[in-house]
Length: 155
Length: 155
DNA sequence: TGAATTCCCATGGTATCCCATAAGAACCCA
DNA sequence: TGGGTTCTTATGGGATACCATGGGAATTCA
Image (cartoon, rainbow over all chains, first blue to last red; front, side, top):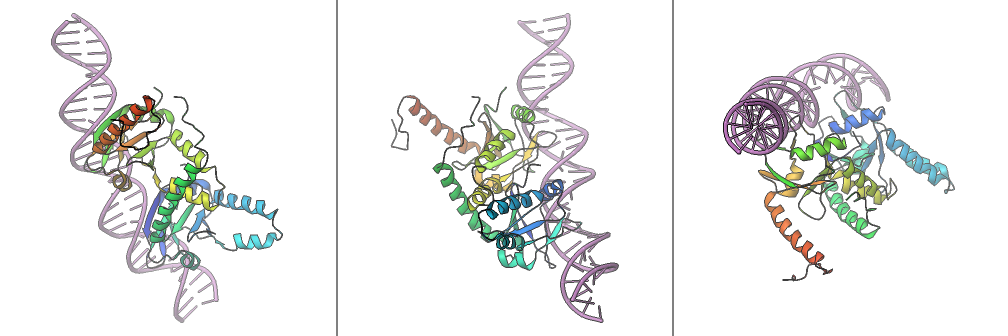
């Protein structure tokens, strides 16, 4: 319904396939993108994945930076050259490419993490570490900056 | 009525299901959210639950940061990656996931506590402790003593 | 032609749907 | 006011559908 949420860990089979969690599949179906859009995360050992909404986000970011950057081409290469479009088979599975394997360190299990407008593909152990750190960071961020616009509201 | 109020304790059945209190169900129905949105509370052993109103508050929090930035990713993992969307069956029951079990310590009973725009899911004994503590703090605050910050106690 | 991919079907486990029942609350009517 | 009746709600359990996973057969590409 409302974006990618929660996280799931699935097994990789002998052919390198893994089931995309059913709730994520239904979000993708709604998004309408053919297959899946995957791109290396620039700042952690995960791969960002999603459909049109993720793609739009990346394009918007790219355009914003292009205006400030002397060479737009380098940026485009970095963004789009590092991406892939895996297919999704009739049973809702994708194949983990070498690029994903190398970047994430995935061997026999895959963790899918919902980030609302996209989801991330992680090696389970690395995700556990990152998740713990992210919790801490989130707390710091939320207490440090202006409190949540007091939506508390109607009494 | 305008939100989740009061508290109820229900039994968990052999399949891990529990009835959501009927008054809470009618609030959810009015809210219009499909199913239930659940997220770990960051400061106590409970899970926050609700519908669109809770979700909107969380989304507002995450939108304070630019998408695709390291900060936004970390926050999104902490917020959306750590949350879940349980369904509500035709009889008004939800299933208690492992995540909820682990975070709350729930085994065979569940306490639902209304907090107006959301409600919390507690293990009954832990809620009793927390509730007693919360009342002390509330009394201290109301009696004009601003420093409630964990000193030996006003007694 | 050989290796890798894609399509298709089988299976076990789990979650979901549906119906049944009991207890309690609200309601109605005399 | 009291007794009976109806509705709602919580809970239990059987049947069913869905999902993750495994493997064979067909297809593609070099």
